[in-house]
Image (tube, rainbow, N blue to C red; front, side, top):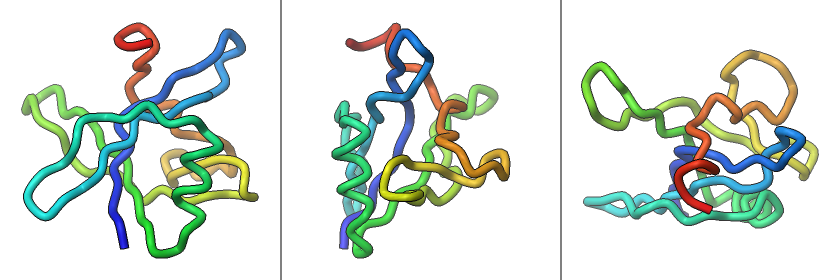
Length: 101
């Protein structure tokens, strides 16, 4: 079983998520983000022994905090329960497109 955190996204010109910033969670640490395609992220989390949650930057306390559980929907996209809509809704995470290509 592997645990992951998702801290951000990359979007295309149409504002559609194409990649996720995925971190591996170890016993005592969490890895740096790995830019992962949407297809590979879906494949990773389709494996029921893997779990993921959103990882949110807490600006007030200047630290990362755990968010909500992330699930695969229709074998095509990831979502949390951020807005209770059945959509590809991890768009509330940090947009890494302007930070890292």
